[in-house]
Image 1 (cartoon, helix red, strand yellow):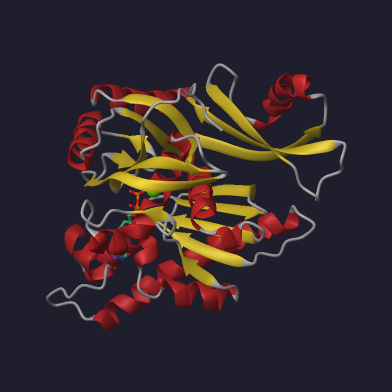
Image 2 (cartoon, protein in one colour):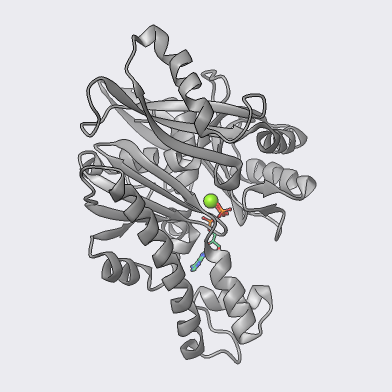
Length: 359
Ligand SMILES: Nc1ncnc2c1ncn2[C@@H]1O[C@H](COP(=O)(O)OP(=O)(O)OP(=O)(O)O)[C@@H](O)[C@H]1O
Ligand SMILES: [Mg+2]
């Protein structure tokens, strides 16, 4: 899936999150049928508070500055990039359409998509991916539709232009996290997995069976909810509340006071994820989920694995998007990568798209 034309050039994957920008550049190496990947560049740059709110750019100058910084610090030689969209800037729907001949499918899907997208064709860019699934009658095919509002996409393109970078590919963040998991973990190719990428303002949920996405939902929920409530309940400034959330010692704050606040938000998160799973189950004949995989900055919350495994009784793992990636220890800080790994899941998927080798 790509909303922009694809040109095979060197480029980086840039995850433009509301909390931080993440940059990954890969070099693919083909050995027979197998491709291996080497990390070429890595960048992390915090975004000034509220410059991006739930996927909408509020302060173009601040975001453009951050883009320039992250490219510069990463030492990449290219200014070409792929990026992702999520949240309110994108509408994702899964539909079924009649199977026609390959030559007729494109027009047919766009026509069938119309009633499912609550905007006029002039207002959106539409893309889709065809999903073959045993749940569907052989005369029909599943289609994941993705529509981005041109207005929102233009905001991103504008800020990238201000930063003097060239956007080449736009992908769904949910598809990026799935591609990253598939490249990094063979063992999940033939299972039904739920990847939950929990950022600051958005949680992407993607359920995939046999490596194909069968369900995608973005929830307007993330680490900000934890920070906000800690701020309010413990009467702290934003920075202090962030530190407390990350389990750091802050003067005058006892860990015992923090726990119930975190648990309260966890239970909200739980009901959102439960709703999502129920919705998925009600739409498929086989609703089993074998594994839950977590990523995003909020996956670093101390008790998150316990929370998810107790709640859903499914094995839970934190994604390491560098699991299968070669890293030269002379060029990169391995401690930093180990500590920050789950945060780079979207950027890794975008970097894979950028080299054109996504699964
Ligand atoms: N060690 C930690 N413990 C708890 N939370 C953490 C930790 N490290 C980072 N976070 C939280 O993770 C969030 C940032 O994650 P991430 O970088 O994935 O978000 P983002 O992609 O920038 O945001 P979004 O996509 O939601 O707009 C913030 O809410 C931050 O406070
Ligand atoms: Mg994010």
